[in-house]
Length: 336
Image 1: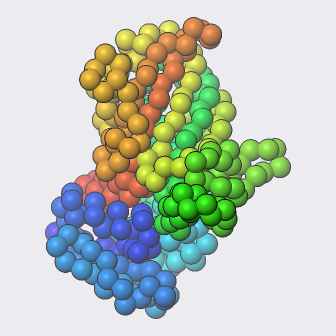
Image 2: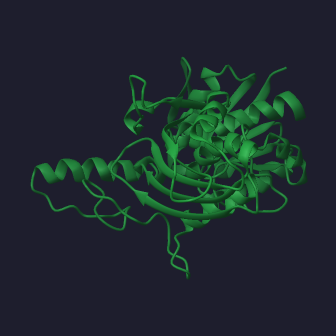
């Protein structure tokens, strides 16, 4: 049986990745509809060896659609996701709007697939934040064997996490610096080319940014509410691929050798040992890959039962589009 799929935000970086991955993984779709804003209507986006005409989201009737993969921005999802769900579709939403709704499951297939069973409460499933996804995929095998007590994470997030216009700003600023032009930030708060910005999203009253709050709140919802988490998030001049240094303190004894064994056996993780030819991975090397890549794993002697590691992942794939398609595959296999 084939399914009818709608991709909302199909002209954006994540929407295009969703279409690519649906095709790559031979998702059982009889029909795929590309949706975007009125200004994008009439354009074409590629789906395998054919092109799809983009339809106006505001005029689209979701009746008859089985699954919606949605990444149009939180405000737009807030309006259209409930309408699609009411029409009978299951919406897998990549925005932040529904993630902390108690009636909406927040799911990473390798971490908490059983939570997907609650999709029917609102017919909406939330895709976690990109930085959260890659971290919990790496942490779940370790949590299972030693139980995590505390996490300290610093992220180095690429410009694609802020959308196509953010990537364009990095490109134009980089080119401009070489021709003696003064960088003019528009998408970012400060110059992004040849720079690092210690702010992603708006600041909150306690000094955290919303991105940092998301990592804390989402990890607790997905993995374990008792874990204590400190997150610091930076934007770096990279086009694709988020990286993180993660320090983990466990309740039970765990060695680097035990942690490596657990990660080698884990779904969705590729472990790179320092003794290997690669030694460690960088975002440039894993763009286009599906796994979360863990390297530089070692024991932390400053705390009891501590482990440090570096992880990198393609934020457009596992951090967004791939996770959404994997959730659709799970829905088809077990729930629809």
